[in-house]
Image 1 (cartoon, rainbow, N blue to C red):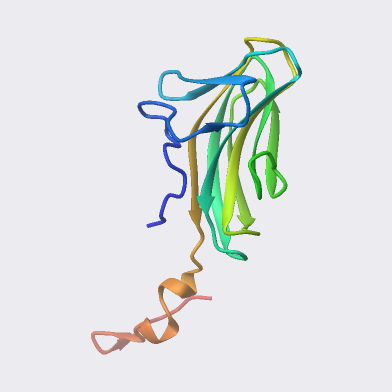
Image 2: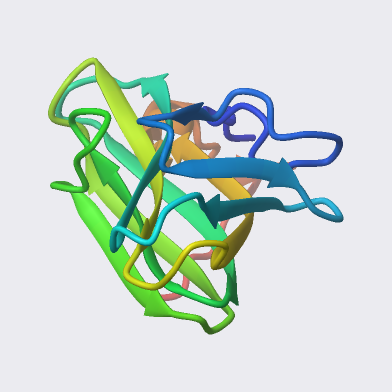
Length: 159
């Protein structure tokens, strides 16, 4: 079982754990999702983010659901609070699931939710954000641990 690195990525009861980069947006709980609403018509509504511990060079896998809304936005992974320099997925008010993998470049990595473009009071919604460290199969079961016989019968392998 993978260890979940994002806190409150399912937004079951609230939006706790997601920090605002500035006052250009408001995060509210909406039926088990986070809704990020623009407070200004500036065209760049700021970011909600969450940092999590990573190991440099290790591979991580993530998933997220974008529920769309009324504006364009993006979600991403970055090495700082306002960056999506490791991974990003942009969208324009549609609903879809995102799966992604990345190699950590620092000991803290950030997942961002951002509104871009549009007008005041436009919004995007997100849900089911999960990130976990990948564990290669050979780290789970080492060759010496794999039995070669079961009840004195050789195990057949198929190529």
